[in-house]
Image (cartoon, rainbow, N blue to C red; front, side):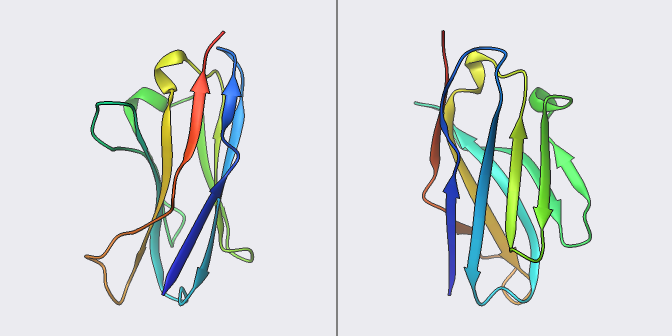
Length: 118
């Protein structure tokens, strides 16, 4: 099985920064990719950033230049550094993991709330 635990959310003022962490554990020797998604109230869950096992990164247009995804393979942890935060970044942020053996199955964390407000 796979367990994902997110942390690092909170309340921050516009223009501020936060760093989210997602620690993965379990049977994860064949991680294909990890990603961050977010879901605002009343809206669908959208991808924010992804990082493949080879290190390739992808960002949603709305966060390019402000967010950075990174990964510590030794710790099986993926990070999302969020800078220049805006009120529209307010959402619950979820971590997702996909494995090579079952690519069509998505493993999700429980989510962490990020609120950007003055």
